[in-house]
Amino acid sequence: MSGDYWRVFDALVAESPPDLVPAVLDRYRREPADRPFLMHLLRRLDGADELLPRLLSDVDGQHAATLLSELTRRGVPVPAGEIARLLGDAEAARAATAAAGLSGDRSLTSALRPLLADPPLRSAAAMALGRLGATECTGDLTDLLGIVEPREHEMIVVAIERMGDPAAVPALLARLLHAPDSTAWGLHHALSVLTGREPLVPLYDNESTYAANVRAAWSTVDASGPAVGDVELIDRARARLTVDQGSGVVSIDYDPTTPGSSWPRWGRSLFVRERRVYGLGSDCGTCEAFLHLAGWPADRASGLAGDLREALADVPALTPELIDAARPLCAGLRTGHYLVTLTDLDLVPVTAVESSWLTRRDEPQWLGAQHFQLRAPIPGEVPSFGVIAPTQPLDDLAPDTVETHTEAIRAGARPAAVALSWADQRHVEGEHTERFLFGVVLDGHHKLTAYTRLGIPARTLLLTRVEDCWGPPGDRGRWHDELTAPLRVGQRRRA
Image 1 (cartoon, one colour):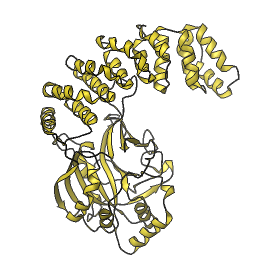
Image 2 (cartoon, helix red, strand yellow):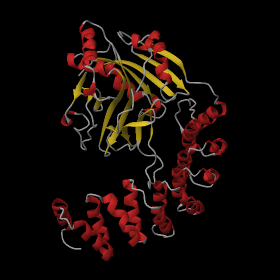
Image 3 (cartoon, helix red, strand yellow):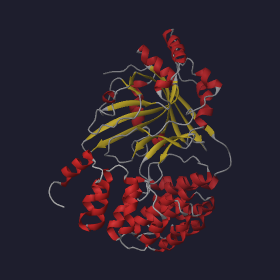
Image 4 (cartoon, helix red, strand yellow):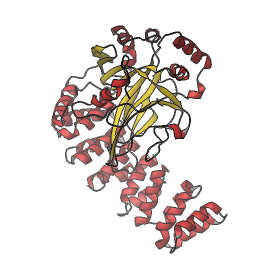
């Protein structure tokens, strides 16, 4: 193909002549040299998910690898017969291995298992077997941990985690005792997933201290339930506490590894009862902060106990009694070290894309739903912004409930909403630094709406897991403290 084929492709897609699809498929089969260009066109045609698998039987080598990678990226299962054929093709084997994991066909286990002995393919094969839930290979995967380098070690650990076989726990505990310090976090995470328990690990300022803390935590883990402890009331707007063996009803964690990815862990999300609600993007320190609705939770993010509901009806200050009432809610969060901050947030509702802090940037990223944000940037040396995201559609709120809160606020009460929050700081494109204070509403959508209608700063109790915050090593909560300092109850905001 020659000339400005991009312009030709644009015209073809726009016109969509009835014979376009058969013509493209025929040319793809007849003209191998044109296949890289035709793939760009095929990706844009309606029904590509159905078209692409039809080409697999006619290709092999790199062309097959390209097709398989595109199908895997789209999440389209490939027939087991085609995968088995291409697992024997040196150029297509890696892409076929990734496709095998997505196929859901356990019959491929026997073809994948020998690949665990092939260094270039073993991590991909391990991930595929994990996705297939091939528990007969659990021992094969744990045996690999002693012979791979740390980066590949994490990929194998993620595969074991995905396998979901508790039989791996003894081997992981034994591995934890002698594994390199750099692998401790991954082993800790996998053990938490497979056992359903997450012991509290002390905060740390270096890798070796953290690894020692993880080993100590797993040497003493018991069957006790969630516990809220180490409560320290700092002042009328701040407290600290810990959650041990938290049930994780609401949590931030890594997404399942994308099929075919060379990164064992990349994107993170906020989950409610294991359902992905908001995508948070990656840990990339030079990428813009990201928050995007993935789907509403099946039910409320948090069921508040009656005592807490009453305690939140009018909150002049943070008190021991309020923290005690919040213990059941805190126990439902993920294990960790928490900052509790009582704030007055001068929020405005965001109903238009162009009004959001998340779209007024180099790369606009609409959150995907109506939400709240701070009216103005947060004072400080670093450009800083605040966004509060809902866990239910804001246009479905009960008007009577909003009016009840409106009248109470107008009469002088300060009912408090509750949000899970975290601090995010990025050096975007290596050129400028920006911070976000993110929050996701656990309870109080009606209250926040009432406050915004009255133009009164919204009293909001922020629960912040330090481990989820961006911050300096050894002081992960510092940037969150700096962001919330001018927002705390009793503080005067200065421009």
